[in-house]
Amino acid sequence: MREVIPAPVPGLDLRREYGHHQSPAIRAGEMVFCSGMVAIDPQSGERQHGTVTSEARRIFENLNLLLEPAGLSLGRLVQVHAMIYDRIEYDVLNRLYRQYVPNVPPARTVMSVQIEAGFKVMLDVIAAAETRQPAAMIYPRQVIEPGGWRRPGLPLSPAIRAGEFVFLSGMTATDLTTGAPTPGTVAAETRQILTNMGELLETAGSSLAKVVKVNALIYSMLEYDNMNSVYREFFPVDPPARTVCGAGLIGGHKVEIECVALA
Amino acid sequence: MTEAVERNVIEPVNPKLNVSRNANLPHSPGIRVGDYIFLSGMGPVDPVSGGRNLGPIAEQIRQTLRNMAHMLESAGSGLDRIVKMTVVLADAGDDDEMNRVWREFFPDNPPARTACALQLSNGNGVEIECIALAGKSPAQAI
Image (cartoon, rainbow over all chains, first blue to last red; front, side, top):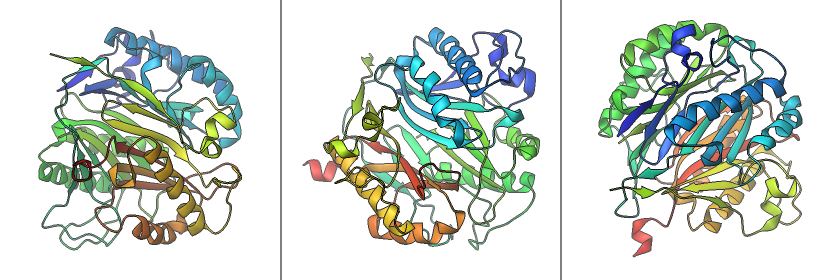
């Protein structure tokens, strides 16, 4: 089951104010996937740029607001991608961060990336749901390899199905009949990737409509809108939770997109 | 009918590899939730000294993957149960070396993977995190 967790206060719905094509959070199986969160006034939706400390505090407070109506708290966080604009602020982030997860903190990776709109911090979070349908068995791990695809001989699987979820590798713009990259504009690469992603998900018995979380990397956040305008065509209703950041991509690509979907 | 979802911390058996505890960082080495294990980003830490292994990038990657294997095995899982990995390289040009080492560790049915290049701390050339299934594979469990 894939269930959108709505924004409990208007400011936390970034679709409303900023046209971000994403749900605030999606609950699926035993997990809750949150979109990347930045320092936003929860009532007005205004951006609250500040220091790493003030932005991170605002984000944690907003996370509390978002998770509480879903019966969750910060104590249920499982994994955090803590994104900061510069790694030099690592200790500054930690000082504030530990106040909010004092006991049994979540697994975490700190990443230095380019964040939307000049923010200094973004938190990308997965939390454990309170309850789930009981599982019957130890889950097998199944490689998803579409028959007709030609792809470069890289040591990765396009996707792995594990229990109730399908985890996809980061995808770049590729012509699947030749396996060759198809470099283009951010819009064109986004379209190619999401077209291929739909096909891959269907091979796995899933679909774009069952995607719960998307992570999109783009070479520059200045191209955010060019990605977003194409992206929205592929997820017309109840879009997945999503995190977008600017990062150094391998192989000269402009866009790379990965996702988790329900199987 | 529903059941509660448990959330438990995962710690490495070898205390030298418990970087977050040793450096008093606000994250757990890993968290198990239900049937899944999420590991924090790991770097090339020497399992004997606890110091950094800042040798050639291929050796750093091998060290990190060996540490990841230890972490997963400490929790009753293993490298063959990884479903998704995220790799951060300090230098985008190290992707060939990464793939070379990956073939040593994951000759068949490799995990899904996303790699990118970002600034890293402490001179690390690589940092890797993963999501794995808990438990041994069903074939081994029998």
